Length: 387
Ligand code: 3PG
Image (cartoon, rainbow, N blue to C red):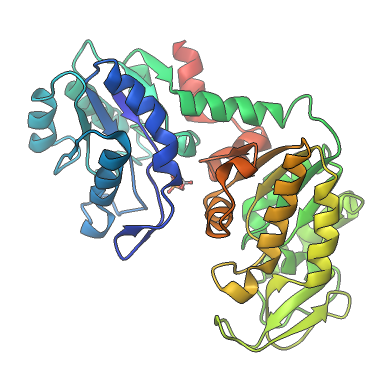
């Protein structure tokens, strides 16, 4: 079995800081290995430039996966080269082999169909003609890449349990949604969230906007935002969005302003209606946390993607923590809640909230947003066509 997993986990000095994607991949892999399959996994880490980069080796992933699976996971020294081939040939039933970072091969992300097909064929050679493909890396199904898309048309192909579960959850928050429906968007760039705002604003009761992207909206309302993150070229677009969806969009009405981007910066609170000319906003203010929490606590369906502030610095984590706790409280009262995006998932875990405080923590950031935007996801389409 050739399995595409998403092991694109955050690393700090070679250490995995959030193993969420590895843990979510374990059930499918364990099921295959327990059933006696020879399992060959392909995955990427980061965005190497199409050549080996030791800093982006999957070695730390292989070690963590071995521990989680309770089986030795071999790491091939290359992607589809002589080491991968020799190891693949040597596998016995139940063995697990992880190929080195698939993006070390430039064909993985090539625009040219023939180039990608070349790599897909090389992957197929590793499992042989009687092999099959399991697509279980939900975080990459929006990528038209050799190990996600092309390989699925060369082998009998299946959605793994993780991909199937993620799709089920996202379907639930796009069709037959229980109201009130609240969506919380944060993160640094408005441009990354534009399409999802367009798609979801007409369907939701409340659209909370925080994080760095809120400052472009605040500027669009006419208030100065000092040195905060700002996408000047998006100000007019934000104005237009506020004109169309002003009745559902909730912006922070106060901001924690820091004199510098530092964990120990001097801070003050500014009201959004007045704005501020000095310093930068690094979190939503206490009044906004209270208002957002009240709305979220009474929601029956919640989707959250993107932190409210620089939560990596303790003193700017209050907004993100407040939102996380309010969603967890709503979930306890019966709401269906989905957290998407690596940063929000990492934030939740860094606050010590257990994964089951939410109905679902998605392993897909971009993939879940594109699904909610209604875009076609190549890695899912190819499975449906095969089926
Ligand atoms: C992700 O981290 O969202 C996925 O692993 C996809 O990674 P990419 O954005 O580099 O394609």
